[in-house]
Length: 497
Ligand SMILES: [Ca+2]
Ligand SMILES: [Ca+2]
Image 1 (cartoon, protein in one colour):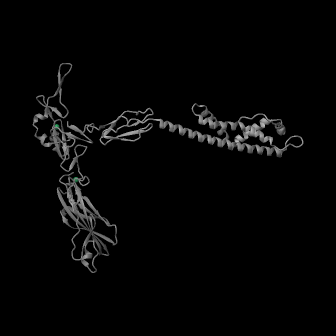
Image 2 (cartoon, helix red, strand yellow; image 1 turned 135 degrees about the horizontal axis):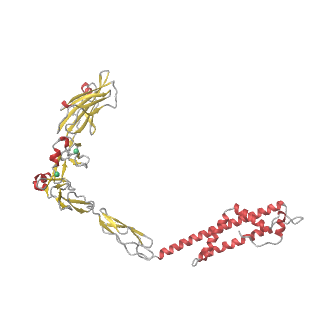
Image 3 (tube, protein in one colour; image 1 turned 45 degrees about the horizontal axis):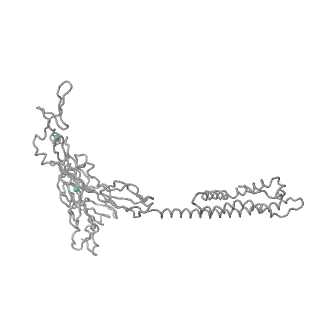
């Protein structure tokens, strides 16, 4: 901090016993104050900023604010000096006593604090005015801008953003199946023109991935494509061979001319394309992979059937199955989850291998004193029995329905179903087959104290539908506590897959 002008000789007399010059004392006091009150340096910097703003052309409002602050800074040392002049008169030798000196220092400190507060307030005011000035300049700049010409949204798309004045942006989007070509957003510039270029929406080419196989031609539509298949091929992507076409082809379709070339010595070398082999007479004949491999169970190349093609072969699956990506196994289509079934209202769809079944589990009709009610889609519970009705109490407490899909000729023995109870009140459980259709293939066994199993003991060739009624009785000291019926229907598919 700058020190003020030198004061009359009295100041030197005041501080003579401390062995310091008044200037040094003042400087030290100022430094001490500076250290104690760190706000002061900040105020100084702000004043400097104010001066810079005041000097810049065209910013006159700031200079008006900066001036009083600068004046205050200059006045500070003078006020400190005035404080010294107000010290009490000296006694005797003209030097101050220690107490008087401390009083003087306190007064000076008080003065400095007052000055500091005033400076701080001035800086705050200056900051406020600067902010107001900045905002005003910004507003003027915005208002002075011209509007840009109207911008339309692209065909098969739309524009986001309505303001067409400087500083504002508009964005563009395309409808599904289209992609944007050009600027995704454009800004209205200060000169009244738009940045970037007007975009347009281009239909996405669904044929770009060349989805049509075996020479099929792809036709692009909005968000889809269709394949025009060559003769002999069907399916959405022309990947399924049409057996009637390939089987009816005569032998000449399966033979080709070899590819021949002369080597350096003038000799001719001929070769056949992949999937063909040279035959006597010099023609390339297709290798019939189906004839070679499919007939033998050990070397089968297709899980279902095989179609020989010129240069290759193709596996096919029966209806209700799709060819797996491995190109030789078939996977069942889940018609129930794909909503491809035609089950009527009130029926339940059960997916089975190669198709689906529509079922309608129904509770037994009321008989004598015994009746049942549906408690879920696959469960019936007995209604409370009338007092004294023994036949009711001996009938099943619950009946549940279970539908099991199974491939033809599965290996045996095979556990098809497990039964147990969650609420076990008695001391033992008894499991038995109570009835059904095609029972020769099944038996019941106990796997542990609380669990019974339905086991298939001989292979069942499909197609077939088998029914088994399993009974689980709960006993306490050989007295029947309750009975549960499991009605199991096994749908055996015609195929082993
Ligand atoms: Ca072939
Ligand atoms: Ca199915």
